[in-house]
Length: 559
Image 1: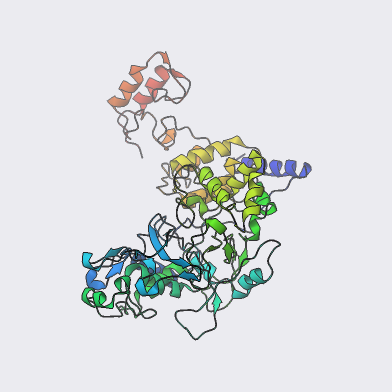
Image 2: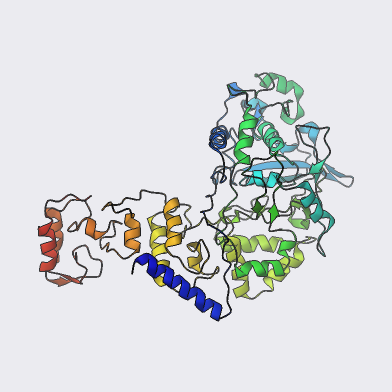
């Protein structure tokens, strides 16, 4: 019986046992493909769309210079300097918002350069500062644009339905905003930015290109004057507006970076469904604001890879009153203590957290506990859910945190270092060898991609597709060396090459020579630990049998 037949047989027995016990797993319908890694393009893009995505990534990572129109006041000189975890994701760079809060309301101090401080300048004499009479300042960290094209494709009606049909105790409201590309168009519910102040990615790109880099463009063509000083602007600004214009393809910078964002895949979720922590998350009311699922528009205004997709951003994209945990900056029609429900997809990767980055460092569990605790701030609309979380047993709290940790977790990345390598292979192998039933709450669920209850060869085929390294086949039999080892081939020296491909190579230098002979002779006649380099036949002894393996292959070079 082949290894494949054994694995399938084991899977059937596992599922039969579950059925007899009345337990079902959240099996995934149809064929299963690996989820894109954070920062990768959407699945299903055409070759032309992939080329456009890559061209957009180049522009997203482009560093602007003074001669190209950077500034004269700005925060950063490229998009990727802020959106860097990964490129397009969240980041740890802060910007500063300021204003004047009085009994009559909030003044963003537009006439004095507010409410966004541009903290850098092309010349020290042009530098902007927070006015002395501003009595409110708040840092903001970079939010993620992973999956932003899918968010853009959520129907306005679906966001408005949430606003008009709130769960009990929830009063979220849509931030109705214009589009920069058509100021005469009807207002639409915002969805981008901490205050949901922008509704399309082109508007988002045009706004950020000016506000963060000082690059005027066809959507916002008026330069920011340092603290509103027009005279100082005339002295500092040496490049004619608009500074962004068409390239050889007829596309502006803002068009390229918009395409990049539109085609960025959503952060992965691993396992994809079924964790008990999500059930608890829903039961304590978190889902009332962190709405799990939407189906994107089927309009031909969007690329086929974006249309009609079920997505799981875990946000209602509405403004909610966070009380004393807000930023105290009014923006558009968003009040001082209102913040858009932060999408939770990708939260696994975020450090720092919260709008002002006050939660940083420590473990993911500690950061999430701090974030949930902030939901209980005085006058916060989310206090009931925050209190309900901390009223849970420690076991149930851990289940909720584990579920949150699945949001942004790359498949097979068992050690959480954001790649899939031989360390993750070893973890897969331990789960493969373990057998038994893998539930979505188990550590091995990171390898059970088809969620059929085990990490088997179907899952390993997907692992090979995403493995970030070479997959040699030393004996040219059509099976990778890693697959051979998974199926039981010995690899006593741990070089991820089956020993039958390189018999006698004790020191791993890919040649059987006197150095290997010395390895064996150094332990000759002794009992040695399992896996020792001098124990070439794996019997626990370094003896004449190991010496014969060296001598029979002496002078050979490994494949």
